[in-house]
Length: 450
Image (cartoon, rainbow, N blue to C red; front, side, top):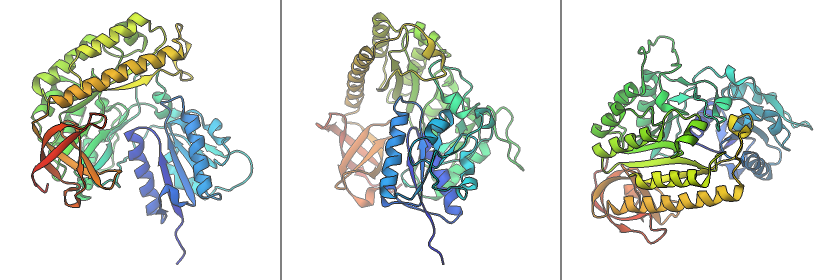
């Protein structure tokens, strides 16, 4: 019997990319390939890229070099958002053999046999993004504790700074029935938590995939999906990865508040606390709506964790504009920030706008909001000292420890105990760890074994 060819993966970017990398891995496994660790050397390397940061090109080159250092004769395939946006540029990176666009990446096995280590640039198979019309199922598996389940792809929003519609195409969704079926499969694997992921998951139902033999619900919406998922046995927790504030409806918030499985944790992108910037960004809400969403969540779930995305240094953002954003965020009862420094993305309206903010000023504003995020997070943690909450325990990079998150996303750590891994335990939040003062020491109160 011939030794199976090996394949290794490297994923850059969002949770959606991780779910799709796992789906690619299952394709290779079904074809008889053996998946191996990136550092072990492989016959084929697949790099799943991201286009969100300005460092996409640099990072891609670094990973290609690392792969070929491990296995000089390996074939290198690049997929993902960056591959759709800049296929020719990537094909010229030394060592890249194949570049696949959004509509081609899940047909990767169709191209593998055509690869050769011929001199010159790699082969490009990347059509127009409008060709990416199908919804492809995907969920991550490997971490027994948590799985990222793809429910939606693409985006019809036209935010002036974003390249995602150019990289992933129009909004399209799975059916409620198929998502529930995938959730049941994940439960059978022993996974305790599912994170629902996509590009704009609140837009679920738009462009729903039609599956032969299955009649999807008419006009199924995100609320329909989460109501059905809440019935899935074996999954202890569902998290909503990120949802637009205009799509985070009262009905969604009220459902999560009474749900036994959906975690009291919301991540809503704000991007700016200034209505002038929101208008220029082509966002579909004003800051007043965002404040209403936060107030609604906290009125029903005072313990809920609320994460916020914000961009600093957008074209035209004056010092007063930024301070307005700072004050707006500071006054809201939110838990942490993901701060992004604006970077010009080719082929976006924002890249043509006047009022460029100096890079040094952008970095300083990022620093100010990062400090504010630390303060918000510490305050949120302090509110829960002395309380008891359920924690799902998982492996830690330090093998003497294990870590986990409460249902409302407070991170904890304690000495390693193999019996507690991948179980949910009720714990007492004792005090704040000196290391960064952001983690919580815990005492296990009851071994639920769940």
